[in-house]
Image (cartoon, rainbow, N blue to C red; front, side):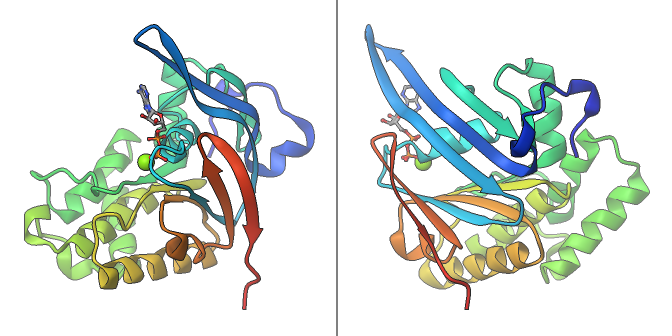
Length: 244
Ligand code: ADP
Ligand code: MG
């Protein structure tokens, strides 16, 4: 869902792409020295894909995810999301687009401790100004879809890590986002919890959602349909897995 009021230029054939980057570069200046953490990154992601960004710590995965999620801005290059050039959007437009179209899943879940599971899922819908009744219906539908309706009244501290991440996934899904961004979604889970979360992400992708996941684990990355490998801010390889 893209707010037409904030529409920038359409970029021809890239309109159909969920994510299109050309020569995306990110630099930071610290201690008087300029560090390049992403250099000339070219990525195309179509609607419905499940893509993993694989690379060791410090390779630039989170920086890239944060640019896709309109949390951070590129230093140079182009970023086109859902067919619209978002490279030079104003802050208010970035916030609106992010809240309405992008679902985030975090390594540390990012839940609000003072809110129960239902309320954590309801929060992004409150930002979008949905009525109480619509919020109630949407949150319940997602809780049921993820088989976590029984956890609705539990607070984060009463849940296992895997349950917390299911709530995190629910909060990303509840806005019916165009893109789901997951930064090391199993990084705080044991292997059983990790595989169950990966299965959940796979089934969400099979229902049509576009997912981009950052991970340092090759084993995890290969559960996605396509892997883009990063090293020191460069793309080094791309692999496509054949679906069985
Ligand atoms: P990854 O997620 O692959 O571990 P990051 O994107 O977090 O990699 O970081 C890539 C590089 O950018 C690292 O060297 C990190 O120290 C640096 N970096 C990230 N954010 C900042 C920042 N705000 N200021 C300076 N350097 C940063
Ligand atoms: Mg990271």
